Amino acid sequence: MIKDEKIYSEEPDLGLTLNYLAEKLSDKFKCHRVGKIKKINTDRLTVDVELLDKGVYKGNTFDITELADMPLLINGGINSSLTFGNIVGCECLVHFNDTDIDNWYSTGEAYEPNTGRQHDMSDGFVELRPYSLPKKIAYDLSGVVLNNGAIKIRLLDDGTLEITNGSAIMKMEGNKITITGDIEMTGDFSITGKIDATGNITSESDCISGTISGKAHTHTDSMGGNTSTPH
Image (cartoon, rainbow, N blue to C red; front, side):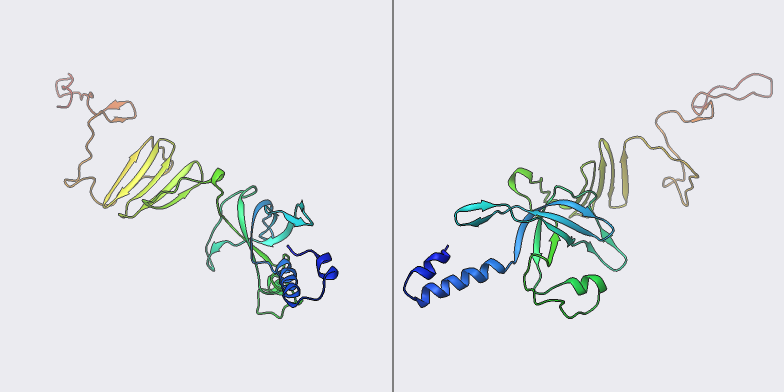
């Protein structure tokens, strides 16, 4: 970096002066910076960000001022959106806009910039997320995956849908749905159509209705005795 004192202590030099001005302009011109989200304001959809690169001045390093109230980029449409829960602590990428965004943010309309700011730290948009090596995730190449740490939804390239929560798995493959795990249901259960190709419900084990066993129940016959169990 060219020191200010060098400009003033040497004989005038056009090349040195241009390099000095280029560095001064570069100091003010921001494009993208890596940061960490420190706070989220869900009412304003903004975040506070700690920039992870440090400033250097005359050989000394210093922390750059934390960015406050930066609009968060969210994947969404007019009536749809995708959010990711608590994102405090996540690494992020801050994009600095070409112009002052204050008037756009407050109105949502086409705007005349409020100031002459260009690529300024006050006009950043925060995007999730790049991953540093210590915080990288396992990337699944088999298809689209939504994972919140407990539940994983996988839409595979072959059209299979798989939802996993611990040892419970629901898999939809072609015309078949397979569920592995316990099923608990509250409410009515109705089926339109056949249970199988012949309209029967088939079970290899017993079916209990109230306290009556489907496999072991008997009936009273016309003579007052009991019939044999179903066979």
